[in-house]
Length: 160
Image (cartoon, rainbow, N blue to C red; front, side, top):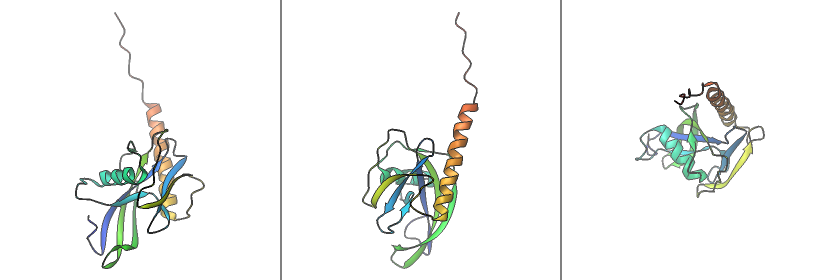
């Protein structure tokens, strides 16, 4: 679970989308110099992977009131060569989706060169894992909206 584990360890990340999943907030990672979802290593205080993903997304996006959707949506394994002193390590990344409120303003953390909203059909990368993550986020948000619209309204109690 921790950064010290070699040759592989778990990481947690969250793709931040707007309330309609029409835009994705991505970070230009300072070390990798590529656009990614927010995420990173689990810390001692993290009790769940979902909690770690939400913490990372809040810290790296500057948006405190993100809403994490239930359950992981994607699992990804990728090698990273700048993370561990012993060499290349496999990150076993558990990925979630977080929804930002409409009026949210983001910030650039020390781990990023830039943080920017991108239309989901014009992402700054063709990386298949991120493209698939965005597709899954759109489906999940659409399902969430559909579910909330199909719930019956609470019955009103007649007044006497």
